[in-house]
Amino acid sequence: MTTARLLARTVRGAETLAAQEIRSLGAVDRIAHREVWWTCDTPGPEVLDLRCADDVFLVAAEVGGIGRAKADLRLLAKAAAAVDAAALVSRRAAFGAVDRPSTMDVSASFLGRRNFTRYDLEDAVGEPLAAALGLPYRSRRHGTPPAGLTWRVTVADDRAVLALRIAGRPLHRRDYRRATRPGALHPPLAAAMLRLADPGPGARLLDPFCGSGTIPLEAGTPGAVGTDADPAAIAAATANGAGRGVAWAVADAGRLPFRAGAVDVVVTNPPWDRQVRAAGVLAARPHRFWHELARVLAPTGRAVLLLPDVDDHLARAAGAGLRPVDRRPVSLFGRHPEIVTMTRAGG
Image 1 (cartoon, rainbow, N blue to C red):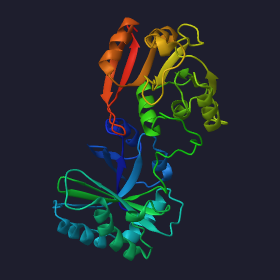
Image 2: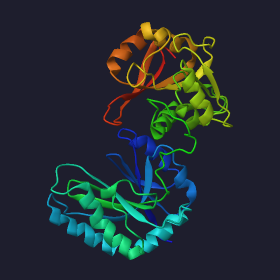
Image 3: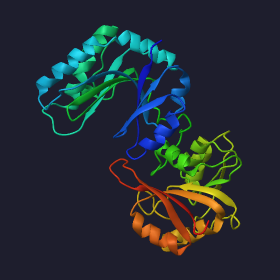
Image 4: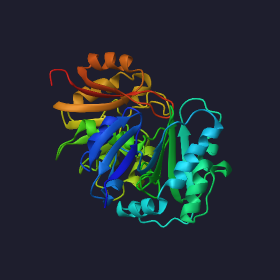
């Protein structure tokens, strides 16, 4: 079997972290805006276990010369018709896909202004691909189609990429997520934060704003602890984490129920009155969180946090004896926070 070219889509800002994970599966060729490209000589289902990637695809074609005019879509249609779609679908199975779709759809996006819509783009490649495979084509012009074989088209500058999703659904849709809450963290972003935290064997990991439990569940660390001031959040986390060995507790992040230096790693997405209002002690004194974080963190421990308005928070963290050692801006659903890694000053 020839070498396969693969493409992972990621959160903006998490590309290098996804690439670190992907290097265990193949050779990374290129890292671009929300993309990691790599080659793989030995197909296997391990690609479906990637945690930092939003989705993963087999590359079908790259097409240059795509301008702004609707007539340029003929180039894409011609390239789609030339793809050996049946062979690519067969290779998809070699990478662990077990579903047998009875329909086909296309999801597309482009950067910059164009004289065509995403639906025009999708239909231009969807119709010839469906004809080649003998599958009904479900256009997204009429709403989200039922689960089927999904192709992905992206256009940036004058270059288009056509690729086939390997999994039956996007990788970011986790099986454990049965219950959710406002402000729930995007799972691949949680996985990227955990890669930065790098909790070793036996490390005690805490998320003091656990919500529905995404970070401790992504960690998969025996003995991980998730706390939240909202009993409804802990109920959701408990439902999501059934049988996974995570401990959950209702606790105020301004008065954490842990002794000094008891926690090796803290990974969390504090509310800061955005999608979720601060509660308990932090509703009146949000700065108390930084002092509690510094108190419970082991002398050589580290904290990885997703923070908006970073410079304001870093000033308060410094006052509690914490210092940043890494900052990574990310883009998520129109917001632009940073992943900040901290240690205790002198730690």
